[in-house]
Length: 157
Image 1: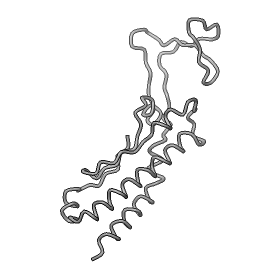
Image 2: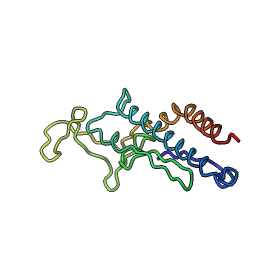
Image 3: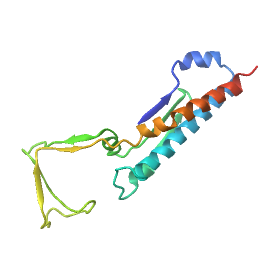
Image 4: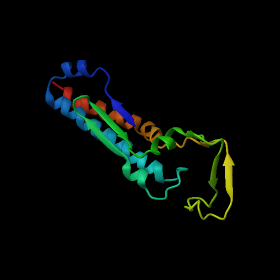
């Protein structure tokens, strides 16, 4: 989950008491979250090394804006989202090794009836395939400019 947050929110709210300014910041947060969300969805499917079979990760990416804390969250509730973003290591819990069928990319097999090759390994390392952090990085300058304009428009006397 990626958080976009204004630091020093209490001081900012005290200085910007007019609800018009706070509303403008909330709208800018929503636009920022939507921008990152859109790019994250493009990253998941467009040329990224992620293999897309069901588009479940893409369709689960969403933005939630917390108006009271001036916070926008962009992320997913799909369990393998962070695995792709940060990588992971799979190790056996009970057995001494992992044992699994080896099939063509994305092909599902029934281990009980599988007649093909099997792999036995001590661990499986899933490499990092970031999709959310690059979306924020690519959007950062536009987000900053959007907030600058929102503040400029609403702080004029």
